[in-house]
Image 1 (cartoon, one colour):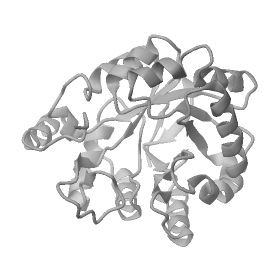
Image 2 (tube, one colour):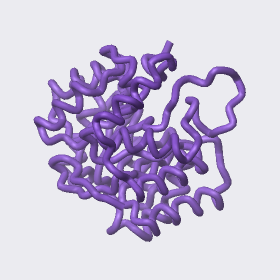
Image 3 (cartoon, helix red, strand yellow):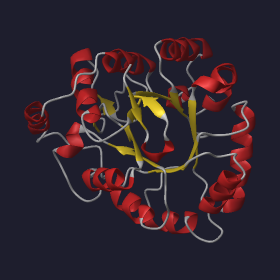
Length: 284
């Protein structure tokens, strides 16, 4: 699988990262282990996890311990204050059976008021910065579904990475709250690593029937997943996180191994196809 440099971190990440969100919805550990082994055996070297992903940290712990030297481990905190973030970080280290994070991210900063708290004098950013000074954290990142908040955060702190939705449907419905392109341009200018999420998100679920373990309606055929992922990986991103649904994540691994850069003309055709599709963001 192709590898790309994750900005100034120097890390060479595979173009697909294993998302710990597969543990949301409490799948059987046996099923999760099968996907994790498949991903690692096929070269995936970047794992993204969070305490909010069910029992993901506990489920991944044994794999992190065994493969620690060969994986780039990214974790997160949804807490906004320094004290809470410190406590959560310690808990995550223990559960993941490691003594450091390659990347630690402020997670889900979609709201302006939460960003203010997290970036303030007693905010979570202080906890992460101190952990970096003590080599517990190697790199610092931010994740958000809201590009406006990301741009604001990047003006205030030298983040090493950003994680945000980069998606063909969003590209067909650009507005400030979902337009990822300004973030990608600034990241390229500053050599910030970009991790894409929601690559295969089609839009909100149209009804209560949800056959996949995702909170959005996904593209779910191999051809659709190929097109959606190839589009995302043809933008200025390093890697894309896998789906929270094990079946879809397996197809994404297959697609990533066959990645072929998508020509601009085909990208435009794909985007035009979704002009009438309701985008996932901004959420109504």
